[in-house]
Length: 520
Image (cartoon, rainbow, N blue to C red):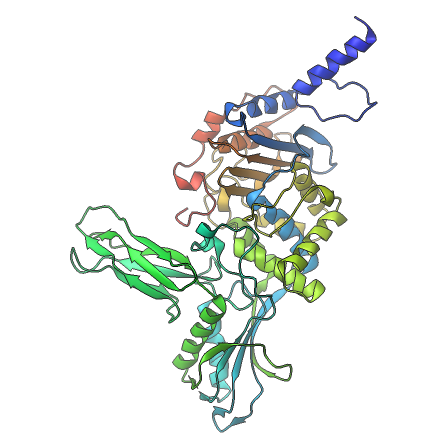
């Protein structure tokens, strides 16, 4: 065979081995490494027929590429988008940045009366709880004010008034992971799902009686329409709780068995969180003996207003834990708008996403080949590459805030909800457990896993795997890849990890297939 023929055969073999693509004029590719061969075997799965997968594995310290399958192909990353948002937020805002909520007034106080309006101004705090508004109300009461002659004015002007992200699906809108974004908002508990409330349910006194309902926090904004009934003991729980579009009417239908004595909880999004937060604050004022004579309305706070009280959030560095562990979409979007407000005095998605993109570009991402259209990955317009994700992962290791951010990533196989996060039911009792730190991603037809894992030899790897347009979930292949990388050693042959084996190492049920299931 001629030298030209030998080179052609070598090139053909390299193409089928899944090697890194070489530039024109480079020497012919060498034979695939054992690791490349093992990963090729995993990705040559029938579930990828007619669908797409990108996988890049790199040395996290040197950046050397160890494996590349479609690494420069644009794919929909779902919540892997949060890797771009979170790193940009840590860089731009800083780990010590705090959100705040202010109470202000322009009118004088005479006796125990504020002779005018009371202003509640939000600066995007996604962790505000009812207890925070109670604390603000106590401060007002302690100042000696017992009556507000004017209105309670809710000010959300720190952000623009676009509430939902680009191409967010209409049928996701009632659910907690797709809440409206406002600079003045409220979360019902320490998952910090801002813009939502919890509907709690219990069976009635006897079969046939109405189901008992309550709201957390209590408020006058959400209107419950209850047609749900108590079923016989042992019957199925068919309760359905859903908000009507464009309103705060929440309809509760179905049945709860009479012997189900554990309170059910369902998160619902609120239409216009600004008014919701102001309502909870007004109730807190009333409980502290401060009466508001006027109504709740929305408007900007005059620049001449004086501050009466301020509540501050946890730091952005501390926020990374609930944000990344539970893949909180509202945190991502709040951070995007806050970056726009801080860096460009423009609390909009467009301004904030420019900050995110500029940070990615500054650390070596080829931003001309990707598109970011929201901060969470709910948008179906987001397109990134596995290569760009690993660029972010490798760059983050050089940042002064890296350790806090790294610790906030979900950790495979750790059952603690605020340690394992969305990976707590995946890869337990395997070499990846308590080793692999990664960010999951989940939409219909999309699954992704990107992060860091140490091999058996102690070599730290950065990897990104994104799968799109499948009909049968390849998530067990993701886990097989993670376990393969964690168990890999260059010193001796490593037993192959089959996807079926990885699947058996997962919890069953919805927790293994979705990052947005509250029961998990």
